[in-house]
Length: 422
Figure 1 (cartoon, helix red, strand yellow):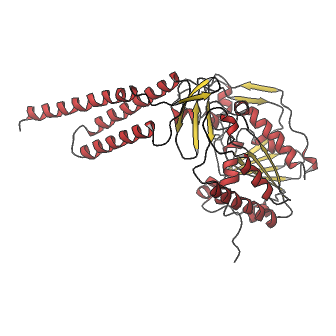
Figure 2: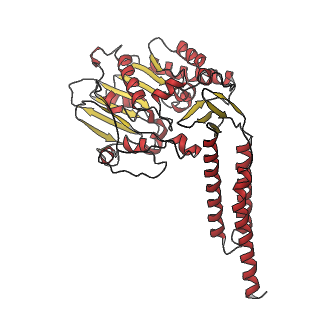
Figure 3: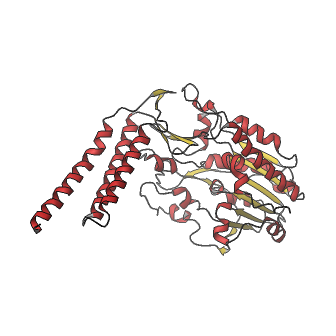
């Protein structure tokens, strides 16, 4: 075959693929996949697993895999075709996102356990369940037993649990026709089984209004208003066995952080481009303190708060401003206050605590935040609670999670906190 004939074939193939890539998104946009139900003043478009969204994603992935397998190491324009494929997929996602905005409210199901509800002015992540109720109760019982074992293993410690109840309750979606299990019975079951020496409290989210008040519009974390409520409740909780804990630090107010347009985790997952959050922080007098991150004193990478306050930040779409402004997740963060308090606190938590951890720490001499998700990866071994409690002279222990982690999956997350009995 002559050179010119080869080039004609290559160009023809590229043109055919390009036309197909351009045509593909519009074949989907023309479909009408929605079933609508009333959601207050909005319209809900509910797409269940196995529906329109799942089918289109599967078709895209199958087509993509087929093109890759056919062209890999065989075709001279392999990388160019992959880029065109990627561009077409982004075009499709953007088209779906804008289409969902026109429909007022749109549901994307990304896992078996969460639904993201997107309206004109906000998003909302609702906890659902892929397991049967009996399995959920079994997981809760296992978590309760672990908490109770810890309380029995360390009788001198003030053991407390604080959790934020995820929006499980069907009250949040009342009058929608969308059925999700009521979560309050799981909360009640959990509390009823706890050892009487364990103090427990939680922030309930029984309505959409409560969710809006305490959580970001586009992110799964609570906002500074919800976090401050949680901080006040935790001080009251720990104060049951720590009389000198003092009163919560009083907030003079809450201020917006620069001109940040925060598009959080739900927005990133759902490709919501036109709903934003403003990051707020607390205005309060807090005593000076020092901080160590994974045994590194005052690392410059811990937080970019000072940069944000000077208006220096990355304004690209979907930047995780929550992690950058407050701080990201680390295996062990230690706060030290020179406040004359002769008491030390150990907190098992995750990113939920990142925006208010220093406030809680101000009531203790030394406070250690342990994120079990990263501890073994960082230190090369499981967290040794027994030695840590003894070496750091721990007085109080707080387990601080969202209800999904704290109630349902803690038995797995914290399984190495108690030594196995021979």
